[in-house]
Image (cartoon, rainbow, N blue to C red; front, side, top):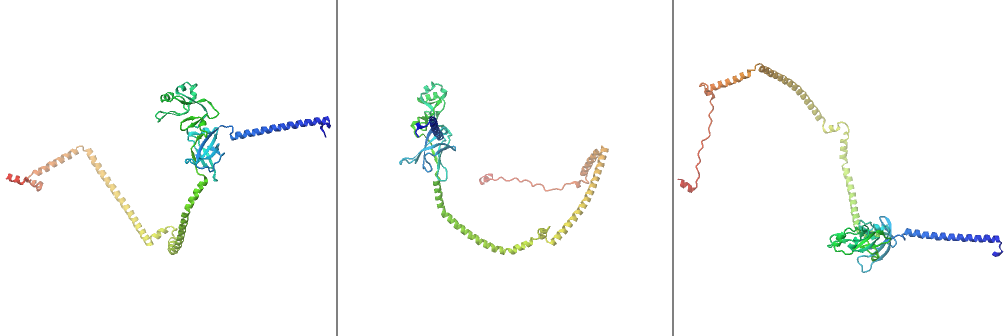
Length: 427
């Protein structure tokens, strides 16, 4: 039916429906565009499209287990990705494979000139390997985001806000033995640098930090340089472990070399087992021969669990009776000796009492007669005088004569000894 044949009410309803459908399609299209844009933004944010990336590179012996797009690990986290893997030129004999990778912000801040290395390690048993970078321990950051400025030591003194400026290079002494100033040091040693003869000085402005890298550290020049001079980024030395397949191949080779030794070992083991079988058969014969001795030993020790059984076995009955009689006689003798000793001690005690009484009486006599000691002394003196008088009396003199003894021989003077010539002169 043509549209003009419709009633005005139907045409009004149809036009309203068309506008509603148009708005619906428009809103659906807007939502579709918005969802697609959000998806792109979320994907870009997840993959780090809007994040600053710092390039690095290294060299490995083999690209086995590595491929472009693989993640680069740092302390167990996904820090970046491998961007390029290429073989080196045929005339390059030092390195085999060139590997370039990127680290996302802020992961490149952990990479310093000392301590940071690129490790290639096995990831699974199927030959997969992973690239991992280690955190720096010293040195300088590999990249800087501060503005760089070349100036003179004198001009560095006139910089605005000098406390916010640092050195961008190492300043060695003229003789090359020491370092006058290190990179990232404040500008406090300018006089020594000027005296050392340096005319140009690289400084960094720490007041503002740029969004992109302004400098990359050069290990040869010992200063930060323009990142465009090193398009592949900063070089990290590699610590590479062989792939699992290579390790398995090495193990298989060692096993192949060890198989002949294993076969020889099995032959020796078979010989040992045969000798052991022969030894067990001989032990059976020995056991049969020793069975009577074991039976006798069992019979001898059957009653050892009774009280005194071991003593009855070691000491016969007659010797036991003799020992009992000897011990009885010894006991009686000890009893008699004990009785006699008691009597002797009693007599000795009475004798000591008598001696104590005598000495007590003597002490009493001495205390009662105070002149008894002088009298005794005079008596002893008179007795001595009496004996001396008897020695001089003619009747008793011969009783006190001492026996004559042979005296020592008289000394004969020795004749002097002379030589023959002296003897003649002496005559």
